[in-house]
Every structure is written in C-alpha cells, then in structure tokens.
Image (cartoon, rainbow, N blue to C red; front, side, top):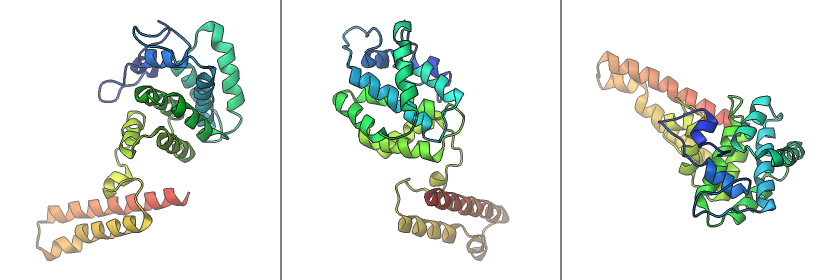
Amino acid sequence: MVWKTLSDAFGISKSGVLRTALDRLMCGLGLGPCPEGKHATNTVAFTVAVVALSAKIAKADGVVTKAEAEAFQRVFKTPPEEAKNVQRIFDLAKQDVAGVESYARQITNLLANETQLKHDVFEGLFHIAAADGILHHDEEHHLRRIAEIFGFSNQDYRTTRALFVDDPEDPYTVLNVSRDISFDELKAQYRMLVRENHPDAHVSRGVPTEFIDMATRKLAAINAAYESVITERKQ
C-alpha cells in the first residue's frame, strides 16, 4: 500500500502507538484505495480543504519550514500521478492563514458522520505544526479553533496534543486548572495554592524540615506556572 500506519509515517510513538489509520485517511481523501467495506469521501472539495488547511497550519507561525513541508508530504503522501496537483494546492494555500476556519467547517460538514476520520485529519495537522520541534503560539491558536469547529472537547484536544508535544511541566497542570479557565478563576486558584503551599504555613504547623523544603520548591513551580500562563495570555 502507498500509505503506512500513522505511527510508521510519523516516526514517533507516545505510550506505544498512534492510531494505525493513515490508510483510512487516504481513503477519505479520495487519493488511494480503501479498506474493505469503506467508501471514499472522494470529493475534490474535501481533498482541497485538507491540503489547504495543512498548508495554512504550517504557515501559522509566519514561515513554512522545510520540516513542516516534509511532514505534510509524509502524512498526506499521494500517488505520483496526483503529487503535482496536491503540491500546487499546498503552495497556493501556504501564502497566508486566511480561510483556516472556512476550510475546517468545510471538512466538518463533509465528515458529519465520520468522527474518527476527523480525528485522523486533526492528528495530521498537529504533526505538521510540531514537525519543526516547536509548537508556536499562533499554531496552537489555530489548532484549538479547528478542534472546536470539529466538535472536539478540550480533553480531546489535550489528548491529541500529548501525542506530539511533551509538556512535563505544563503550567496548567501545575496549577490544576483547565486551559479555558477565566482570568478571575485562575487568579483565585493561584492565590489558594500559594496559601496552601507557602513554607510559612508549614512552619507554623511544625511540619518536618523536608516538607518545608518541598513546599518551597512547589511554591516556586506554582509561581513560575502562573507567570507562564499570564505571559501566554498576554501574547
């Protein structure tokens, strides 16, 4: 087959495997054979929308890097006879990010009953965005919006993100809040965590020294996480 599994094509594995669904994605794009019992979406509109959206995600940080272009070619590899047409669409679409939401809505409409295929498309977009080793703020902004249009929950988004971005000290995780928390709720949570983990509070309770040291380190992490979230939101 022209298409490999996602884990083979991406060349990475988190917690063992990614979905082995690139053959299903190829079928949906109408660019190759379908598994038994499946039918291709096989519309020019869908193919154009997926290729264009990929190009615009690659452009989201201001420049389409070689790594991102190569990632697109790996994920959406097409038969030789279609390669030039697909590349032409990609090159035209990568000029700017205009139309991201329109293409996302078009894909959603075409895949109204194909939730799994939407996930496959979204994973492909994430792979392209993260191909250069950095998930830029603007790339993540567009990916979040696409996830919303696709009808994915915040947890769906986080789960997909975790496949491609390693955040051992994700500030939202440190603060134990969701990424869509309001500023006032964030500030209240931060103040509560500071009160609960301030070393002085532990000293007043007469806890062992090692617990005070741990509290000092945790408070530093909480402060750093809060600053990181505030900086991100200002940007």
